[in-house]
Image (cartoon, rainbow, N blue to C red):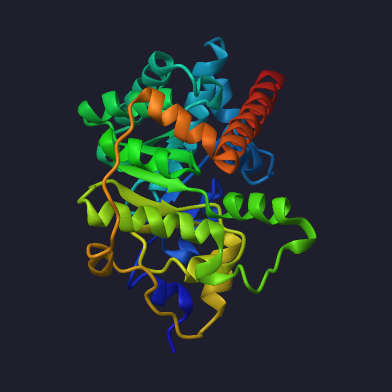
Length: 316
């Protein structure tokens, strides 16, 4: 019997969500994603401490932000030795509201990869799905620098990313689920909100259907999973980025897995086309309390971990 991870790969491109490249080979993902929190977690491990020290030593005397980018790219290069596809490398979350600075940092990351012999087609620049971040991605995509728009919680963010010609988006299933569960408190019914009824799953399914209905080329990659039920309910999504723990759970199960999302069915859905200018985007995001709160929280948390990575590098 084929395990669930292999069954999932029949419907969906599987991506590993980790900075721990030593774990990757056993799951044979096509791509891998990283973020400041995952990189920080990796460099605090004894397995990766020498890599960090070597990279910092090789670039001592350079500006701190330049050394950080060298560390991020070093991890990306190691990941690309294991995965055949793409790696996502994130722009500093503290630049999430600065379009020009985001573009400049993306240019530097791409130059570092290209200097190491990696073509830009194997790199996705991760950027927060703020209005400023989406406009940075619009400009970068025109240059052939492909982007992964992250911290995506609202439908308006997905629509704006599609209109900007972004390569890929990462709607955060688990963090949406977290918000609704916390908001409901004791009234939350876990069984009733599982699978296709999970609010995080429903958000991704709506975006997937809208993109397929209206011919939006942007790839949809569900992210931030809390359990394998959420993953199973999104089988058929373009891509899913999954932590090593959940990849292992899928690999350990031989229960049948069926396609949940279908592009052909989505094309016949009743979903009107919408569009957002800046004012409309900001208002729609403001009207979504969950998305507003989780976007702000996500940027804060990534910024905190970016600061911790800065401090760690300065201490070496």
